[in-house]
Image (cartoon, rainbow, N blue to C red):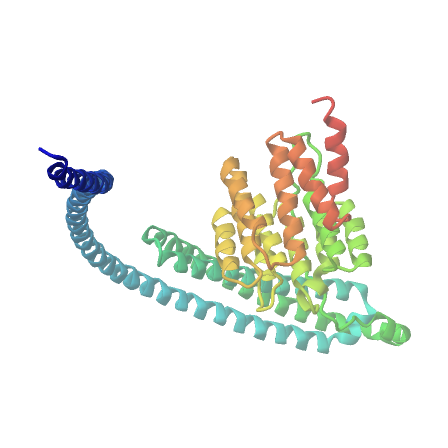
Length: 489
């Protein structure tokens, strides 16, 4: 071919090569874009697979939790069924118990009504005896008026009339004792409503009281006959003493007896010997008088005088010295408690119970005074009376802490020291009560620790009492004694 023919062909070839090169570059660019798209799709696929795995794990966990929940629901349903069966059984037992309780209540009510009717009869007898005593006292007063001038001038007549007055007051005291017994029987009846086994003993007591009433009636009749004999004797002596009246007229005003109420002659108390043969020392009564004096229940001068008389161990004179305060004073409770304590330590428990009961009479008795009565009764082992006082105090304002103390002291007295400590701990944790009650609780906790041989704890509680009241009881003496014995221990 010639040159002219090759040139167009070469141009076409060149153009084809250029076009091929362009298309090749375009294809390479498309391939690169496709590779990038494939890489992106691959990354998205990996992420999707990870999400699917996470979702699968969560689904498996949900299935496991669902299985556990189904098992728990099944167990709960079984327990609920068992509980329903137990409640049905309890309901049946409760119905049976209520039926038994109704029957027992009906029996107790009938027995209580019968015993109360007997008590009404005894009260009628007591009222009759008191009426007879009033008439007896009026006759004695008439006799005193008739022979007043002679009695004021002659020592013999005064002594005889004094004996008559003593007999009358002894009879009055005996009636008061019987009235106290009737009150005690009434208290036992209240207990009988909670315990049927305690209904028989008041019936026996009623029979004993009835017998005692008959004895007292006989004594009253005998005393009346004695007064008639004395009256006749004094009328015979009037003629012989008429000549002495003029000589003794100047002494009439000085010899006239006072009109104030005086203490009746207390019956002789048999002093019980101690283990070494000596007479009792009245340690508890001495400590009680000192404590009441420091708290202001008893005046300092009265306390000192009472301690001086008690030091002679003459119980009769001690009772007479406090009689007017105990019977007619504005605050007789502390004096009745002191007399009861002295009588108890002398061995006269019957007389002590009479004064302890009188100390609890009245509406506004100080809770701490009631607590001290319970402590004195605890020393006499009167556990039923002690628990009754504790139950009563637990319902009184400012009485809950002292009620816990009484319960703890009784537990400690029976040797149950751990239970006593728990009761004291409950008491000391009660707030809103007087500081005196807190001090007494800490004082008792110290004594409990001392009884258990825990000297450090005892000293700690005594020191807390000293911090609150340095003069409280005998705390300082106890601390000194414990610190002295500590090295030897």
